[in-house]
Length: 541
Image (tube, rainbow, N blue to C red):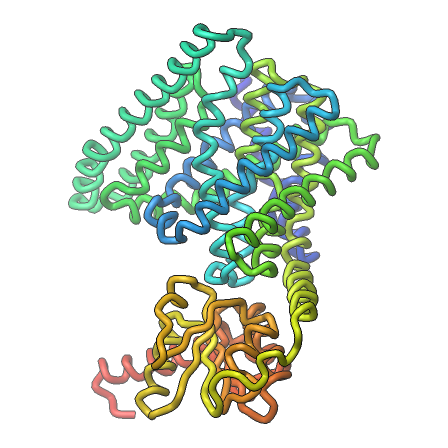
């Protein structure tokens, strides 16, 4: 009977998440905001009817499934492709945020061990929310999008040692006994990861190949379910966090043969895992003491300021343009899924008190609710910062230097390279502006490449935009492209500005910003697909 009761509670949670998620999207918010608010609203009822243990069980089930799907999308190759600078940014963000928040917690009277846990939890951001927000805004290919994604991936990796250190922090042992506890925890984790690696590397591919030959679409899903639940159970039996095993299984399975098919079959199940976890997390925060609204607001504001400030400072130190670093920091200002896991694990280990955990969960939920409007406001704040920084420089200091009567191409990705190649074949002098330092390192007398953020006036002046014959903006990110077009239009005089619109809906916005001609990728791709279809059908247009 109890099992059916839990099933009814899951059904209520999913139904409430659906209603609140749709309502959040109707008012321009992310669906995750609705899931969290659904949990906060349902918390008083569920706390009386189901009890604390059932709510935590639902949250653990949801987060284990969710982190397994996140692990499936994780890729070390993808992380390496983001570059060393982004990896350093991630490491600096984790250590810097942990240190600042831990010091604040110590000043507030927290014990050292509790302060370290709180700082570590605060350093984590939501990979799920981040991916949704920057994907919806078509910012995955932007400089700040790549930076934020890289930092998020580094945070995901950092959870493994964090989860292993919590039992050590919770123990009273010191000296040799504490060292033995630490070695034991890492040995258990090593054994778990080794066993998972062997099974996923050699056992899983054989099963998947047989499933593929038999054209059985059920086996990949069953294999994924066994990997997720089995690794969670083994991790729990070893005294580690159950969600750690689920996340590790997802990462290892992501690199095995036919992993793409597993992702295609399993990732859609996140539609159920995601609202289940966030609604359960909202319920845990919903029973916190919300009477001290001013204290809660101060904590949320402080958290956002610290996380954004650390990324901004680290980004500038690593030569990331300040506006891009600011946008990356605002994208990472919320608290993530792993933060909930760390706080709950610390509570169950005796490191944090129940009341404190509820307060911290309330702060986490509030930061997640504020994340969509923060990301939406980030372009305006970045533009303001860029204008302030360009105002500090001497406008026109380089007005008479550099080439004349040339074409400035902004962005040197695949599209930008094709533009440059075509222009140079026609004998045009070209100057490139790009944000990738490796690209700028290839600058030569024949093809000058300026390194910098093209939303900043001094960068465009250095490339000679006021003296150019034309400016071509190939930046894929629509908001960045609009800012670049606006700056280029102001400096280029009568020279034409040609811009790339990744999606047709952004075409008018680029025109309003000052682009004389806009090339819509969707229109070009549609024409090319139609041409190829006619050719395949042997129909002459």
